[in-house]
Length: 102
Image 1: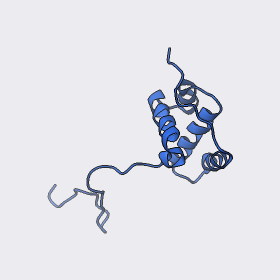
Image 2 (image 1 turned 45 degrees about the vertical axis):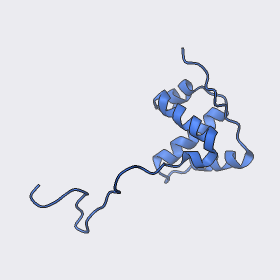
Image 3 (image 1 turned 30 degrees about the vertical axis):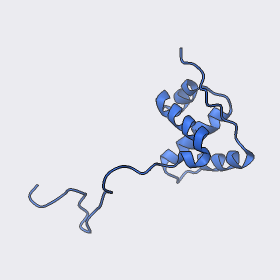
Image 4 (image 1 turned 135 degrees about the vertical axis):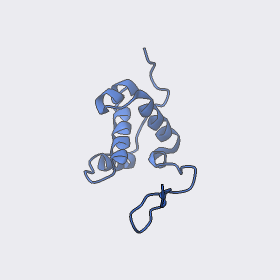
């Protein structure tokens, strides 16, 4: 049986308002909405397993975002820079790595 998370989430009124707004954005990127919902449910006392089941996610994903929020607050919900060269697209619509003859 999974144990309770050591990362207990207690929101400030400002954080609660911001996360509630993010969770209700219909035109926002999916990841932004889901991360907000994870933290709101965590603040209500739900376990990672329960949150994962409610949102259709893996428990490890919920655990990751709970921990990041606990350590970094709202900034922890942002994507971290990814290694490697950024993807680029040519004006003709071809993707990165696409060249003639391939």
